[in-house]
Each structure stands twice: as structure tokens, then as C-alpha cells.
Length: 380
Image (cartoon, helix red, strand yellow):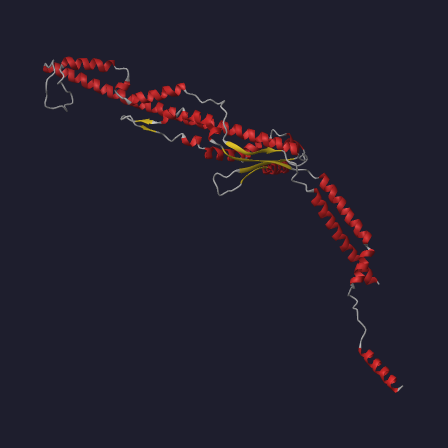
């Protein structure tokens, strides 16, 4: 009996040493927190659904954008055969023909048929804002966006809005090198528009527009160089003709003076003199000198005096018979991948927008539920 009493006193002693668990007023038990969230489950569900529906409506009503793409590269030799033939027909006009029969081939026309140069011009033309602007002016889709601008804006704001619209659509026409470090790298081109069909048609038509422009530019460059060469030859001819006429006049005057001297000296037949460098030579005799004077006065073909005129005349005559045929078909680029109508849109990403809206709504609902839980706990 005494043992039981002693054990009971020991238990009371140790139990008095163990204090019950203490909970501060600011601490929240996990079970209590989960219970509070469960209590506000309809609030969380309602918030999540609201944001999901709003995100879905936003995604559905957002403007769709589709991109058609293609890949281009430098033209091959057969792509430029017709243009090369047009250029090379003028090659003899630019060559230099020497007196010994050798021909110095000019490289002045080589730049015109360089495939890399022509492809670079296509890239520059494709990326030109002026070309983009001119093309967009004929686009129904762009004109519709332009009409939708708020006409109630003042002039400055309307101008800024138009600049912003043009800038946006300029960015919709893209061209990017696959490997910028390589000179012969292919380029990916694209056109973004409001529908799959329109993006396809716009890219196809824009490629045709740039093709036509580079086609005309190449022919214009050829005509410009040929025209410049023709003017150069014409000027050379004028200079050589003046020089030949002056030389002919001088020779005729010398012959006349020599004739007078020969008559005065009574030299009618050829004689031998010791000084061949005499200014007015009379060694031919007056009869021969008179014939020389008559011959010099009768010369009309100045090529006799200046042989270089014959070559220039031949080149100018050749230019009269040659012309640039503007109806020829050739390519300054090559389509490595044809334009294809897109099957997926660029934006909006409706599924992604809806998922993000759902996540935001769920997180916001949880935050609101936690705030309500804290306030209720403070009140309790």
C-alpha cells in the first residue's frame, strides 16, 4: 500500500514538470489552414472559373495572326541564262582591241551577272521599307486596319498611330539568314497576316512584286552601263575627230608651204636631201607635193588619219544594232522551299492563355481565401 502511494506521488511530480503544448495566437495549424481553404472552396472555384472564362473569351476575341514562310537562296546558272546572254552580247563593245591583234577582255559587265550580287539585291529589295509600304498600299487587309484607326484623334496623334501601324506591318514581312556568317547562306522569308489564306497570298504576291522589281532593276543597270559606254565612245570619237581634223589641216598647210618653196626653188622632180627633219620638205618635188595637197584636201574619212576611229565607229555601229530585251524571263533568286499555307496560327495561343488564366484565377482565389481565413481567426 505504501509502495502504491509512493508511485502515485512520483507520477504527480513528473506530470507537474511536463507543461502542456503552447500555441501562440499568431500561429496557424496546417490542419486548421486546410480546413479554412476547404471552407472557402466555392470562393476559390468561382474565382478560378471567372478567370478561366475571361481568359477564354479574351483568347477567342483576340486578333489571329498567321505566318506563311519560304526559303530562298542564290540563283543557279540556268536561272540567269537569258539575262547573262543579254549582258554578254555587249561584251565586244567593252573589250579593248590592241594593234597587235590581242584583245583585253573587260570585266566591267561581270558585276551585272554575279549571282551573289543579284541575290543580295533581292534581299535588300525584299527588306526595303519603301517596297513594303508600296506593297501594303495595295493590300486589303492592311487598308482595313488603316480604316479602323480612330479618326477622332488630332492630326499629330493620328500620324503617330499610322506610323505605328506601318511599323507593325513592316515587322510582319520578315527575312532572316540561316547562317549569318556565310555569304551563300539561304534566307527564311515570311509574311504574317490575319488569316492563313491571306498570309499565303500576301507572301506569294510580295515575292512576285520583288521579283519584278529586281528583274527591272537588273535590266535598268545593264541599260545604264551600256548607255554610259555609248556616251563614252561618242565623246572619244569627237575628241579623235577633232584631233584628226587638226592633224589633217596641219599636214595640208605644211604641204602647201612646201609646194610654194619647191616651186620657188624650181624643184619639180624628187631629189635627195641630207636633212629629212626639215619642216617643209621639198624632196618630193613640186609635182608630188601638189598631188599630196590635193589628196589631203579630198580626205573625208578621218580614220585614215586616226585609225582608232575605225574601232570606235565599229563599236557604235554595233550598239545601234543591239538592244536590251526587257521581256526575258530570269531569276535573281531560287526558291529552296516553296510558299506553303500555314496550318497553325502564331497567336493567340488560346490553350496557353486559358491555362494561364486558370492558374492566375486559382492562385488569386487561394489568396483571397487565406485573407478571409486570417480575418475570421483574428475575430475568433
